[in-house]
Length: 221
Length: 128
Image (cartoon, rainbow over all chains, first blue to last red; front, side, top):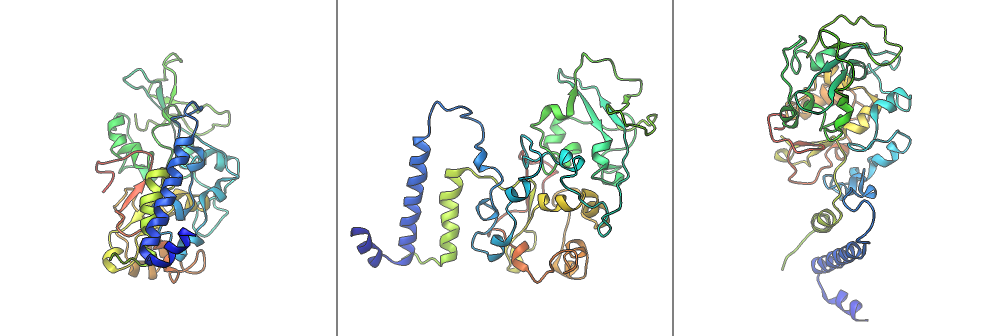
């Protein structure tokens, strides 16, 4: 038993490093053995999504508290899926009642003040135009979260570019950090340019049938 | 001879084997807060947005509790938390577990920088 002999001789730290090396070799060989002609070769490995805290690279795996924290996968199992971010469609999760986040810190019965108003932004490039739905945003947020610090509530007052968004400004204050990332282009660029022109003022009635809030307000654009 | 405590060893193992080989990313929206933690001798804080948004809408913390929307704009001290401000509004043993459970928040790896772990790298004023 060569290994047993080694184990007795080597100090604690060296044994650890040896174990580490072996683990690395095993992982590397597993990676090499993977089928080179497999489907979705360049797509992120789904098994690597939503890692438990102890394996996510930012939590300290030695800290006792880390092991008490809930692994995201456990919470996300029942929630509708999406293609990126947390791989959870939070808007669907909320609308389908799978989650019931409080709008008030203490009172679970308080209903959000929802404003149903779509803002259409005709974009300069060839991408489909952007439809910004106040409804989905006001279900989560208060007006003051965005207005006036991030967006001036006035038509034509906000210059928005993808560059600014990627630098974490405007929509990028949340999208790309907590809300769905900017890689999901068509969730915002959702209105094909061939569609009928936006109504005067850039304000469009919401697509869903239950919209009944006033539509005459000019915001953003 | 290199002497390592079991703790350092585990950190080493995670640093050298886990990350480069497995390419695992932290959960989307996790915030590392380390403006004061390590200077004060405790581990950095990891705040999971996902866990909190299952229970509360954004508005509760970002309006009622006074957390700024911008990453890095919130300078929170333990003193304020214990007095019932910021995290302490809920982490008081009533709505959520209280501040005696240090390791549940202060659970980050040593040396982490304050930032949000999101979808794309932002280098501009949105991240500081």
